[in-house]
Image 1 (cartoon, protein in one colour):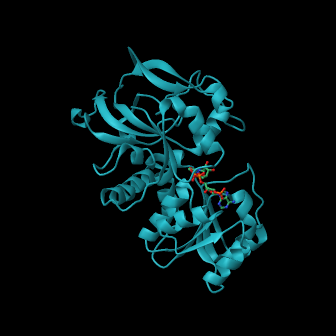
Image 2 (cartoon, rainbow, N blue to C red):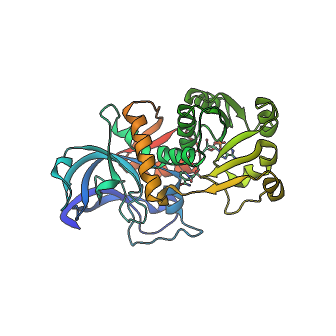
Image 3 (cartoon, helix red, strand yellow):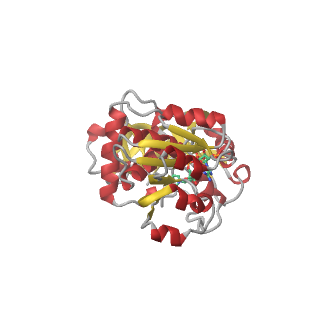
Amino acid sequence: MITGKNMRAAFYTRQGPATEVIRVGDQPKPAPGPGEVLVRLHTSGVNPSDWKTRRGGGNRQLFAPLIIPHSDGAGIVEAVGEGVPAVRIGERVWTWNAQWQRAFGTAAEYIALPSAQAVPLPAHLGFAEGACLGIPAFTAMQAVRLAQCAAGMRVLIPGGAGSVGHYAIQLAKLRGADVIATVSSARKAEHAANAGADHVINYREDDVAECVQTITNGAGVDVVLEVDLTNNAKAYPRILRPGARVVVYGTSGPEALLPSVALMQKSIGLQFFMIYDIPERDRQECLAELGRMLDENRLRHTIALSLPLEKTAQAHELLERGEVIGNVVLAVD
Ligand SMILES: NC(=O)c1ccc[n+]([C@@H]2O[C@H](COP(=O)([O-])OP(=O)(O)OC[C@H]3O[C@@H](n4cnc5c(N)ncnc54)[C@H](OP(=O)(O)O)[C@@H]3O)[C@@H](O)[C@H]2O)c1
């Protein structure tokens, strides 16, 4: 539903390079439908899937005539639709799945979305931090849950300085695991260590499997939380202990070649997931565990850069080039 008034938004009507297709201008301000809240957004978080969807290709087609990108964001509930308690008005919230199978995401002054997708944001967290939760922190939470990370387990987190990886290190440590992270530079090594990684390996300079063997006294790790199955799977036979589990949230190519005989002989479990589409029960358990961590202020958030809404295209380009350590957030207000 729209109200007849306008709002500022970043949007595109065709897929392609960021600076060619993203425009910033007026769009109709939405109104909350039944079961929805209207959020006045302060921030919008940019994630790799936002630029991949905008660029198109593969099975990512433009599914609506006009897309306002981004699933993550934070702001204040300004109005509620039928069936939503008025007490929510004025609540500080963060969003999840705001542009998953929905045309209008958070790169705008306002969003109307189902009430459950606007989660209370603790008072000690800023709106920029709130815009890092819907995809990066949520994905890390689900990866750690699916891997059943627990005290004493050895967990390998490739890409430990990535947005998801950085939260994954923290969440695995909070569950008492022993964490080995891989990175590609000294700056990223410091970032992963600051998140709590017990061991950090530079995967461009060192043989990761050899390092894992040394660190684990030849035993291998119990779990891998994988950012790039395509490139990293070949080392699994030397990295994983028998019965280990690999939870995959990222892959750099459409396909990955698996050392299948070795994985079978070691009875390795392989699990993929996409955070947009996890079962409702998992969603609730993630929200509960993540909510506790946020309430207790136990997570570090890394805002690499905050840009104005007008610079949405540049924010996409920065992420696409992989130049930032941490999250890129748009300041909408
Ligand atoms: N399944 C899901 O639901 C889900 C959710 C969120 C994200 N993702 C996907 O997960 C990936 C990471 O997302 P993100 O937001 O964390 O991105 P990010 O902030 O760009 O982090 C990715 C990190 O991985 C590192 N990396 C790349 N290739 C690597 C390799 N072969 N081994 C070890 N590290 C490697 C990168 O650094 P260097 O290049 O310097 O090594 C970077 O630090 C993206 O492909 C994204 O689309 C999937």
